[in-house]
Amino acid sequence: MTENGSGAGRAGTGRVLVVGDVVTDVVAVLAGPLAPGSDTPAAIRSTGGGQAANTASWLAAEEVAVTLVGAVGDDDAGRDRVTELISAGVDCAVQRIVGVATGTVIVLAAGDERTMVTERGANVLLRPDHVDAALDGAPDATHLHLSGYTLLDADSRPAGLRALAGARERGLTTSVDAASAAPLRAVGAAAFLDWVREVDLLLVNVDEATVLAGRLEPAAQARALVTVARRVVVKRGGAGAVWVDRDDAIVTSSAHRVAVRDVTGAGDAFAAGLLSAWLAGATPDTALARAADLGAAAVAQVGARPAR
Image (cartoon, rainbow, N blue to C red; front, top):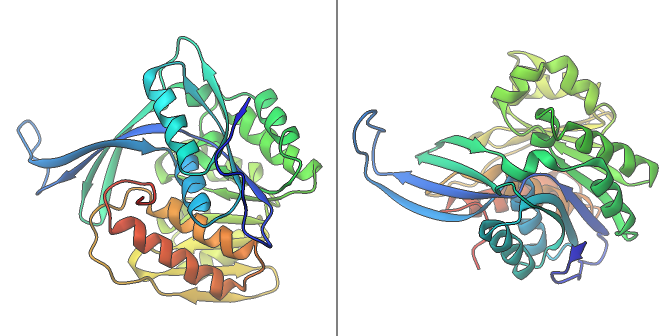
């Protein structure tokens, strides 16, 4: 069942389906170094999160028609998360699963770093038939963006694989965000690269690229990965990003210098900026510039969603 947000989209960009996690983020911005076994002062905020839900929210803020495909529990948190997304203009094809809690992530943020403690909850119960139903329910979709977390968990992996296969069958372009270095390392580079083979765009940060392509400089990592994906963007945080594609294009961009409050969701915002521009026909340098704009906006605030 799809619950509607704005339903409107920017001219030149078809509907984007974003598949993946919806969670509650409990974000603690630490006032200083973590004191194990004792107290550390922090500013603490509970808000909507999840890689896919964040990206969908930033896409909606860019006036892209977007549908989020995911799963929440039949609990107050799940209802709140869906309500927030609809209010932000996201159409929600989100399963509500009885007897399971909505996912929660505890985020410890300190300067340019953040550490996450994760309970994926209902997210692991996303199923291929629900993904197919969402694809069938969005005949105006032209692109599918998949959060790598869906592939990295064995329970939700069939849904992630079905999302990519179903998108291809329907003629949609595809993108994948590799999500996180530690679970990538656990599943193994060879397996992950096989799952994402021939996607139109693969997004990785430097740590993820190192897991998948080895300890090379970022442009060389991207060149190695473009043998698997048609286009690769390596996110370098404050050092910017690099785009490599099979036309031998190598484009680099710089990041904006802003005061960093919380890096949670910065990569999700970056992905939304990149997709909103690229899917509208922008050149790689223009798409990277828009990605940098949204990434900078994300780190300048607390929380992973666009400020309203």
